[in-house]
Length: 321
Image 1 (cartoon, rainbow, N blue to C red):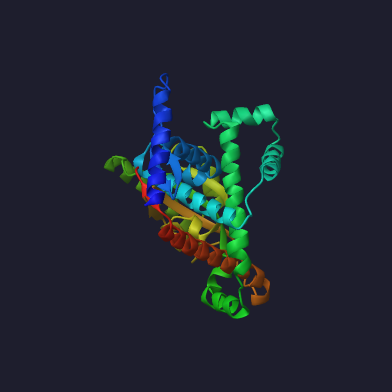
Image 2: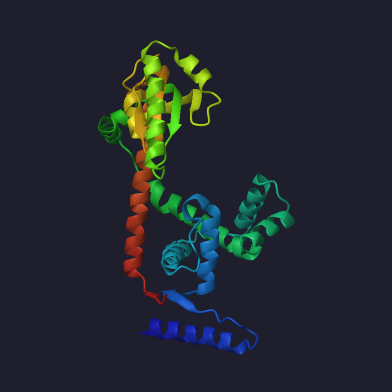
């Protein structure tokens, strides 16, 4: 009850502070509380900008103003606060000096001056102060992870061997083929009469090959054709890199073999296998360190998830988003 009253008091203080600013056109609002700590909408948006900056390939397209995206970013903030509080309890918080060192290291790695880095952050919607705060939180997360999670994990030889036996096929170097191609485009929206015309063209080419005309001669003959894309060497491909119909044909052929006409959603293909690289097998000894790292990462993530779940259950969390 006392904690609830304290949190209500904090909320009222924040609200009064906002009301006191007569010139403020947009009033910040509280979106969650974690024990006695308040998370405002501006805190949430700062967290979102940093996550998008650090992981553009995963989260760059998320809209900060989208309600579902905000819920995701809020959960990240709650986790960060729980970790920060845990570090404070054991006296292992991050110092300003450590933040300075990390900040300067990032600038140096990106070959930017203070002014250039500040300008870069501004373009991403962040101030230097906001980024430093986020950097401190990231350092706290890493320290907690190393101290409370990773240091207590042991991976045994039996675990490594079991993983190797279960995933043995995945560690074999993938078989590769190097191919040449004759391709007649025929996209799905092509009118039927034109599609038939192009199908007849690829069939005529196939007939010439059956009669013994060299693949190289066909490539040369149709090199300037507007309807034929002739490629004398497309390069190396694993099975997963190719469309299924082409992969099925390519990996059945021997070196120097030429396929029948292959129809895909893109059009009509005839391929020639120029070379083949056989799958490589790896011994257990060669893979031991690699498997240990995989298992270590999996166990670390599992334990962190378990810790966060318990921390959430024991915390007084209220979401108002």
